[in-house]
Image (cartoon, rainbow, N blue to C red):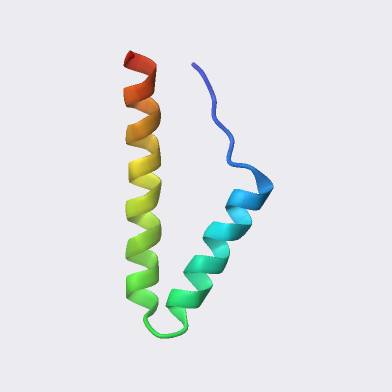
Length: 50
């Protein structure tokens, strides 16, 4: 099975975005994170089929 990695900078960017949103709405920050991970996984799966 192929693996993918998120760069250190990308991981830091995601964490910074989460922290910014969580300052005002923790639930929204968690939902955004969950949705973004799903989108990344779907993108990777779709690109493998191409």
